[in-house]
Image (cartoon, rainbow, N blue to C red; front, side):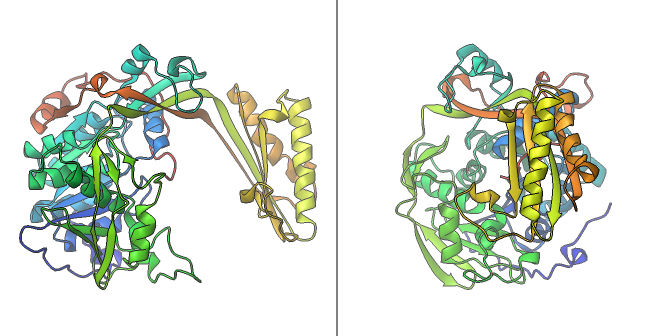
Length: 491
């Protein structure tokens, strides 16, 4: 496969101006596992970047990756990672752009080996480093901390504890870059830390400077969700119209040594970088803007100021913070039975009444024939206010999609849920259509805290990765856990 150029994918992106001397340009190549590929290619080709970051993990994603690794010891990393590297590495290598990603998910060593193989196949010489240490399953089993959700011991909370991944900070990324890595692959690292690490490395900032680390965390938080700061997940055709969402450009930041930054995007791409889009992203998933806790710093966003200095150019300054926490957040994954759902649509007059009758039929049969209690079932009437959980009245809908879902103890019972919904075709109300079913092993997610002292971050360089590629065993033993396709939830 040759070098792919953005123009071949219909891109209208144009080359960005070079950053000013002394300024570091860092770009967002992805905001989640299912993100588009072409915006990163545009940035790699036209952005004159120093760093390109792929943020590919949500809370459920890494636990799902652990599930996949159970079935395949060489799996468990993001399934799109190799393709993202294949598209962008030729341009990054040519321009001296370094890549940082948490796409290693549950198996960063295997991810590093796969990326090395891809680079060799393409004839590209880029040093790869892997950051490990986020897998703290044994530490959780030994310490047995209380879960945040129900204050029960993590090992005894119910279900089978199969994974525990701590949120690492920027230190491992910085160490890898200091060691000469051109591609850094991690497992679970806090999203903004993917940006703090490169900036800290580039400027030689002190690790214990909370103002600069807090400002870098604000920059990372603005960039970490990719297109969200350029108009994605922001647009509304009436109140916040955004042009060109089909060719949405992903953002970059020009960062000075004092932390002052300007958020921008490539000319010719869709979307918009505005004070309003930056403000919404700054507050995204933030409970307390004055105390946003990350592994690196307790960031203070309350003094952040935005200023429009040109089209799609927003200056940002005023971030700060205090020392990072003594404990790290850990995401726990539990295997706990099986999940299933069945969906079917009713349209036309009395669509809601027919969907309600269909739901009653399914629940009665699941209870009588299969012994599944109605208490473990969830019924939704999509199109009739389901998202509002009865808090909003809707007019008589013209169509309704019935969804019956539940979590049960066995795959056999899970299959029965979908089967009873599908049987409505010829055994239920008139006019049902479009039935779909899904069955999967249930993965529960909880959180706990673990002392930093229990977490040991290790950086593995290209030479070590190469040495282990020909061996039967990896650098770290495969963890006895389980996975899906590694994509997980959509945020």
